Image (cartoon, rainbow, N blue to C red; front, top):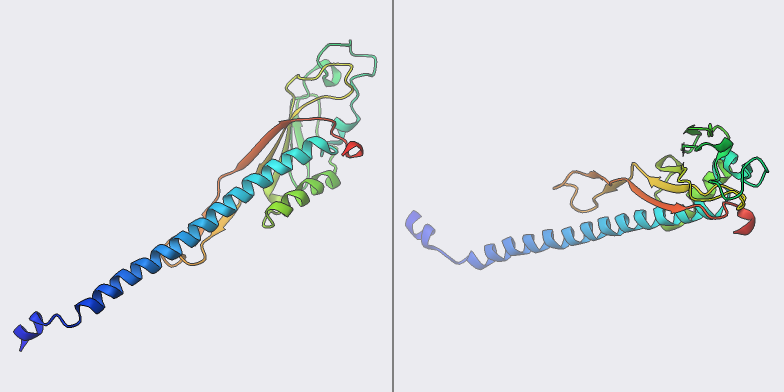
Length: 195
C-alpha cells in the first residue's frame, strides 16, 4: 500500500501549479511594493528640489538675511557681501527655530517663510511634515557689495521619512527608513515681493 502511494503521481501537476502560483503572487506583490517605494523616493527627492527652489526665491527663514543690506555704505563696492565684514557662517532652521554660527545669530525666525517652503513641498509629497524639513543657509562669499543682499547657498534637507510596505510587510520589515534628501541652490532675490 505504501509502495503504491509513493509511486502515485496523480496530484503532481496540482502541486506544481500551487508552487508556481505562490511564487508568481509573491513576485507581483514585490513589484507593486518596490514600485511604490521608488515612487515615494522620487516624490521625496522632487519635493526637496522644489523646497530649495522656493527657499531661494521667497523670503528667507532667517529674517536677518532679509534685512541685511550690502549697499549700506560701510562696505566697499566690489568686496564680498558679508555681515559686518566677516562671513555670516552657517544657519540651520527647523520647524521651531534657527541657530547659527558666525556673525549671524540666526535667532530671528520667520515661521511664515518656513511654512511656505513646507506647504509647497507637501504639494509634491503629502507625507512631509514640518519636523521633517531643515533649511540651511551657508555663506559662500559669492555676492559682492553693490548687489544689495548676500547670496548664501541654501540647502533644503528632508529627514526622517519612512516607507511602509503594503503587501510584503509579513515578509520584510514593515518600515524602512528613507535616506536624507537634500538640494542646494544659490540664493536669488530671497523676497516674496518678486515671486
